[in-house]
Length: 325
Image 1 (tube, rainbow, N blue to C red):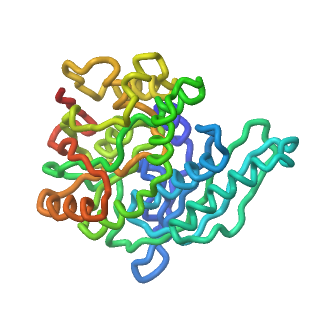
Image 2: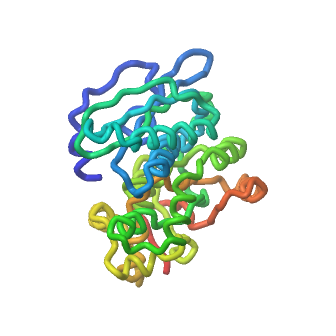
């Protein structure tokens, strides 16, 4: 996160009045006002394979890209593929499986894939550009969390640790199956419930980990948070794999980056790493006004969406996090 901030500080300030959200707030997508309160919401995301199966890799990458729009309360309209692949492997059917996986997730999301771009790359990479729309008045951003809001997380943590164990050939089959289900589950329904409830502040939990994305939301909202660590649920097998040393370097860097802003109390080192674990296609992290909290939780439960109440937004130094164990 620190390295990214160093890069982004060189971007030229934007003066276009129609730009509603740009990189300056660390939000999940760019937002551009069109007309009559309609806003265009655009994002892109791509990465190297996390799993061995190319079809699953395509599904995970597409779900991850779509998540940025869902985090902002936007409705996706269409997508474009981004593919890097070794030319010498194109005849083996692997690239087709990756693209097929992405297309399947797009079908579930109800959007067309309208083309894309590919390059010859020695290391496979896949992702999507996703274009959507949202009402300007209903836009959900990183800047609107307020003291008293309760924090909801809609997926369990640990995908980075499991993915590292998969690469090492050490993840049990049941653990692999569960993490693929988690990473290919769209945040669409959670987003729709969020918008219906009138939630104004949210983000999705991805590469910077739960703590990193929470810290970013708090900084840009000018508030602090208190987290109930036992309420933050993790995928089965994650703690055992972390204790065995299957922790990605990105998760360790995330923990270093955010540690100065976090009071961990008596939390042990493994639990700290899990809270900072770099996620792929993670859940939505919402800051929810207490007046609509019960209705939102009921709506999520009725739609069979996992949701954990994990803490609250409080007054304090912007970005400060207190973890209660």
